[in-house]
Amino acid sequence: MKKILLFLTLAFATCLAYSQKPVLSLVPQPVSVTQGDGYFVLNADTRIVAMQQSLDTLAKQLALRISHATGYKTSSRVQLLKMVPRNTIAIALSPASSLPAEGYELEVSSNNILLRGSTPAGIFYGIQTLLQLFPKEIESASPTTAKWQVPVVKISDHPRFGWRGIMLDVSRHFFSKQDVKTFIDNMARYKFNLLHWHLTDDQGWRIEIKSLPKLTSVGAWRVDKTGTFGKFSAPTPDEPRTYGGFYTQDDIREIVQYAKERNINILPEIDVPGHSMAAVASYPELSCTPGTYSVNSGEQFMIWPSGGHFYGLIDNSLCPANEKVYAFMDKVITEVAQLFPFEYIHIGGDETARNFWEKSEAIKELMQREKLKDLDEVQSYFIKRMEKIINARGKKMIGWDEILQGGLAPNAAVMSWRNMKHGAIAAKQGHQVVMTPTEFAYLDYMQSDVVMEPPVYASLRLKKTYQFEPVPDSVDPSMVKGGQGNLWTEQVYNLRQAQYMVWPRGMAIAEILWSPKEKRNWNGFVTRIEAQFPRLDVAKIKYAPSLYDADFKVKKKDSSSVIVELIPEIDGLSLHYSFDNSYPDEFYPAYKEPLLVPKDAVLMRVISYRNGKPIGRMINMPVAELKKRAGIKQ
Ligand code: ACM
Image 1 (tube, rainbow, N blue to C red):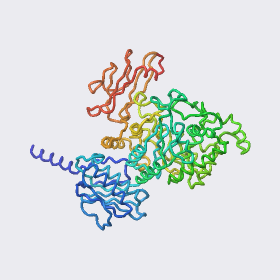
Image 2 (cartoon, rainbow, N blue to C red):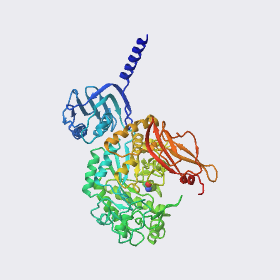
Image 3 (cartoon, rainbow, N blue to C red):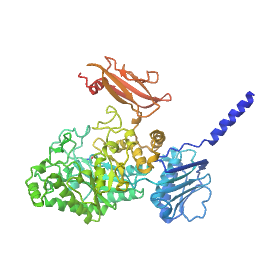
Image 4 (cartoon, protein in one colour):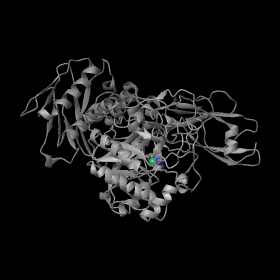
């Protein structure tokens, strides 16, 4: 009897093991996935075939990725096949009607792999999915060993939105040409298709304009400072301007082409009339306020009163009452339009401090002449003239949602950043909208407690990002082009930190913009992105482990004591803590309920464990900070 039982148990376990299909951890989640049994196993003889000449570059890209990681001499060729032979990965364009734009169908059998798309873009995305189906070692840039198998599966997939972007600010900190290419590579792996390139701001003008050489000889350089950007000491006039850089027009053409090969469009932003200190430092005659200006080096120069207009301590805006400004912008836009094939140019329009306009005689005269009743209408006058210049160069205009103030021409598109409300208003007025609200999509915000992150004035947890829904109930979905995450770089000094800020929140945005809304599932998403982390490790891409950091919530118990609550962001963590300054491990108490902080404690340390293993980082929280947050005077 015992033997029979043992036999049955073993047989059952074998059946289970055999029928259990591998867990796929794809990000973003595809529209439809049907798993089969077994694997396609890639070896040194595997061939890659492009069925059309127009897919040759993509086939070569795939062969290169595979040969880098495997060390095989995997090659590709162009050939029309009736049937896909054994041990072959074939990519093919299908008639346009059968698959949605950017869509693809991927069929992996134990014999071969067939990837079809209606456009090369679809094929590109199918390749990204295929790479995620390989073991993580496929991310290696140098030959390594692994069982190069891909689970048998049929995937049918296409994006929910056609605008899936990330904005990179290269003004506050400069990112080299190679940095930008790496940033583009990282976007492509999660199926983003638009890089919004914030090329100008108060801290640096980063695009060569040949007819205005001072923009880059003067405007691209500032004093080199390290620490907390925005709180730097004011530079003296004689300090050398050694920090900065710019992209030559050749650099730009190279990056545009590089992005195109990865199905990424580039939206250039020239941020005017505010955020223009670098331009005004180069050509002071563009200001309403004559004087000498210098590129901001990270010292404070603006005030943000709560609820009020921005207040500039120095005039950093172009003067809408000055005809020279329009001639200047015509030169800039003419060159920008020639460099970027994308249909839109972003004109900025955000956060214009108008306190200097208020005092300007020239602005008063302009208001009288043009019958403008307030400064909103002055700004709108400027933006409408920008639109004419942009349209005259064959492009459409998009701007931050302040461009709605004082009226906007109907063909302009609006990028809604001051939450979703302005996007909804714009859509109802008939403007196409891109949603990029601070509360869900600002990738410069802290991902965890301020004691763990470079300090920024706001936080945005991964879980909150994953709740982003670009189409509000009240809005016609056809008015929403899509959305994007925005990476401002005041506190981002280099590419590693840029990656840390973007991932994994960028995966949440990628999934929101690509995958069907009804498939969204937080716990499933967490499981899948945790499976992405080892892949990013192999690819040497930095990411934030902030999802393992608990949040701290405090309550004042009495005039000197505080109660602390720990809130994990994800399920299944065990939070071990100490108040005695020592480093807690799994033998320390695990958090169960709100704790009264011991009277004389000075430091609370917390670390997350899962399945008996430490995960994430040690949080060192000063008790004085907890008391301050609870409103206890010390
Ligand atoms: C913005 O964040 N000022 C668009």
